[in-house]
Length: 369
Length: 264
Image (cartoon, rainbow over all chains, first blue to last red; front, side, top):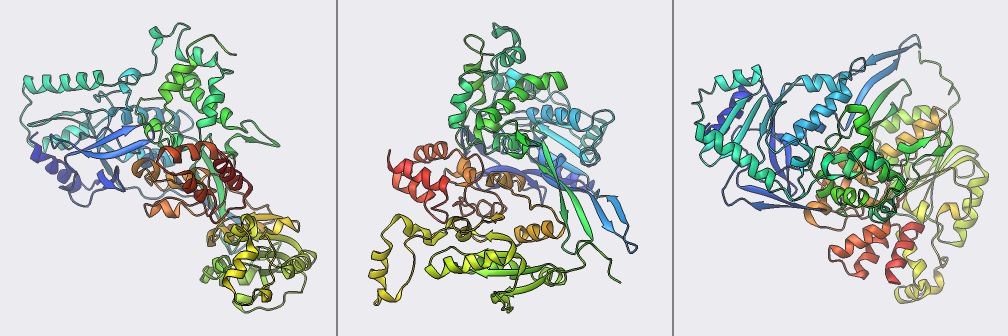
């Protein structure tokens, strides 16, 4: 697909009544927002990322997708940060009437989704859409999604998706996937919906050289990543789950607790974190009440609050809960780690705590149980 | 016909002002139409700013704005406590002593002498202190000023007969729920959000600027780690002290954080 036809792709989706969301520069970062026009995508931007640090810079090659990722993945689009679940009202006879609140959600296309985001979405699906426990609010948003994925050609210093096996080239879970080369995009359809949209664009077939160049670009991007999580072979004590669970009393937890703010930002930007709190918001006249769900975090007090006690009163316990759930016990629940290597918890931690560095410190030396 | 509820007798409410700017009382007045609904459900006995004047009658709930700053304040808060079932302190002045508590760490008498031509006409205490320093407070609502939605939530809880929800989470939780970009990470500014109590809805970060801690300390704060990061961002020790010594300078957590930086 020629570079100039990226706008046509967005225009085609808009013509098919998709509300299109894509990269927009806002407050010094690339965020996903609704696009007003098809030709508004920012070009020539890169995102320099390091622990606790994110700055926009220029891409000398003037590409559309030379930035690795922004402060949020697809999570806010499917798992709303705050929404009403149901409403109760007192009717004229004084009886309580309950009604589910399921707002109309438009068809939504997201342009610029990364491989790590897709892997995270699959994990959110596993949680919210599991058999017998299907979350209606998540499901209706999820069903409306059309995903235009992009191969990451320029990973940030905080990225480590190659080591988790989730990127940088999208392999599944998308409707359309793009790989950006100098002369245009190598485009792949991943669903019937995606194939139908591509059909309307009348694209010529990519040459073997172009397909090869896209593959090599992905391999080079993987090779350029400097951070990693340890795999099975690099750990002397077995898999990461068992090794981490054998280190519950490691002094490193005390060390990280002196640096951690317990602000919960890592959990909010993590594309797989799904914890939420629910509360009732009564109307002032006392005749109705909304049951609201909102993002919660294991770094907050109420998350560890049980009747009469708090099981995680201090930062040490909260950080340990987050890390061991994400990287260890997640395996017990979902059959894999909850980390997709996007690096957001590293870049968006206000004090720059590096998960890969903490894991490295926790998995060396003798067991502390 | 209105539906009968358990609240067929309207609870009596008073709103009192101490040393303060009146901004928290405005959180009531700014309710607009909702204030009219509220007036249907409670009897506003005393609320000088809204017109009702009767500070001495027994009430069910007394909202108290402002800090204790004069000898007369000390007597008056005792009187109010004795004549209410429940006392709720609202705003930074009532919960931490407010901006005027900056004098607690200075020579207040000297300041008065510098500013007023007749310092002897000023009768103020050496220290500005929160309401809880003198009387039992049943619930504290932090913020400078508190927001109308906080006031509504408290009143609603009390009308339903449950304890108000005490949200001591950090501002970051509200910032992220609004899908805002962290100003500390993307601009390198010294944001107080990670140690500050939620309730404002991340108002300052929504305008692209740093939180300055006007809602006071959150639970489980790590002020040492934040101060260290402020240093890494290039702030001088004096600038870090000023971050913690602002609206809520006498909140114990912020005071300790500032003193620690000073003694380093």
